[in-house]
Amino acid sequence: MNFTWVIWAAAMLLTACAGSPPGALPPQDNAHRPSLFLALPATCNTPDGMTLDASGSMILSCPNFNEPQYPGVLMRIDPQNRLTDYFAAPPHPDTQRACPMGLEFGPDGHLYYADNQYFNDKNYKSRLVRVVHEDGKPVRAEVVVDGFKLANAVRWQGNHVFVSDTFFDVPSQPGLSGVYRFSLDEFRGRPLRLRPAPVDPHLIATFTTVPNHRNDLAGSDGLAFDLNGRLFTGNFGDGVLSRLTFDAAGKLIANEIISRALTCTDGMVCDRKSGNIYITDSEKNAIHVLSPDGALTKLWENEDTDGADGLLDQPCEPIVRGDELIIANFDMPFPGLKNTAYDQHHTLSVIRLRR
Figure 1 (spheres, one colour):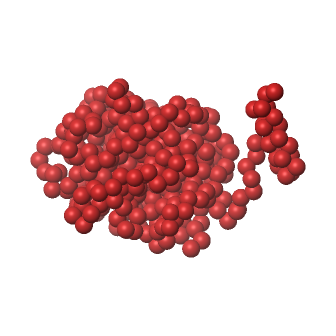
Figure 2 (tube, helix red, strand yellow; figure 1 turned 90 degrees about the vertical axis):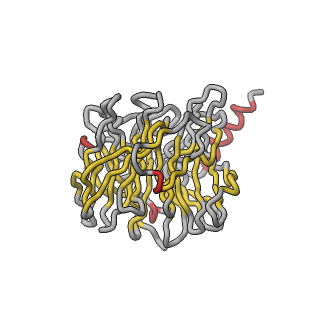
Figure 3 (tube, one colour; figure 1 turned 90 degrees about the horizontal axis):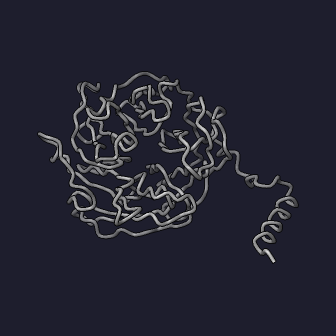
């Protein structure tokens, strides 16, 4: 007897009895249903990283992988949600493309972003770039670290910046990724040049994405510090969540897996008010919540959509602004994701937080 078929048939019968069509998601709390925060122009066709400046405006990175005829840019969204140009990210001299992704302001008042060149050239072209600000305005860009494979998320803690590198491409260690740490004091003079992974001394932690149903070996993606100064990250390919713990001197004392419940994690952010960490799930068009007590729950999930109404369309990065959870929709399909096609709706979604 084909037991797989029997189990499938029983599941379909239970679904039908519950009054839901086969494959439909179970009922969800519509209080957390995403709505449209902002529709973006074609010049912002692949929204990604977000951070807040001192004025409360949001800086949005758009590497524009979906339509590369448009250059990668940094945009500004003011407190009234008006979108304007912020800074033209300089192209890499070899690829002639700028691909800004994760970004955050450092303690020096300058903006730092990961320039992910992996989709243009896999030969260690990705960089950490500093956008120098004068009187609160961006005036020029300078490379501070060169030699990443797939630079992705950027987080500051004190005078140290942490950068995830999602895929090392090491043939003998498939699925290997990691997190680097740099001191602000190192960013003087010529750019730092990384040694190929995994031997550079700035590499503080590595992770291995295991074989999975999507055959995706992408690793450490989003980064978020909790209220206790512990650093969280998750693998894009297999969804494993990890936590890095440091001692009072900043030495890494633990790199531990805290959950294998998810199948994909992308960006993440800690809500400094509640302590919750919000994690985007690009595979399932979902967003999850990791509470301070370690409980992991799903906040929202929707089926494949073009995102025009604000539903999640391959969500990649979250940010908390006041009582709003704002989510960038990457909309760049990879095998095995719910999102099956890139479309002409380029959007940010928003969920109202109830705290």
